[in-house]
Image 1: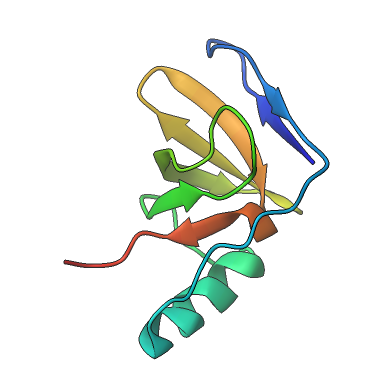
Image 2: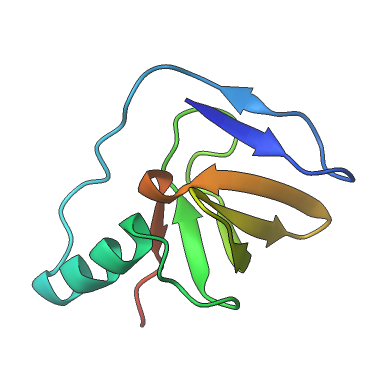
Amino acid sequence: MVVSERPGGLGAAASDASVGAGALAPEDDVARELAAHGLLAPGTVVRITAPGKYFGRQVTVTKSARTRYHVRGGAERLTVPFAYVEPVGRG
């Protein structure tokens, strides 16, 4: 799995391992399903769950492409597959 970097960011992370995101509250299951299908709106804060350099980083969705979210975390611009983001819980 590769987390691609957009121009202007730092290095890219790559790994073929999968990571379990842990248990979420039942109300978060709906949010996770939306994320997995590319249905999160721009401005949504998400956590990257892909293993590697960006694991656990909280970033903001800037747009949704065909199979990936374009996200921004400070000056970094990344693209992340839908399956490797989870919405950050409220609270």
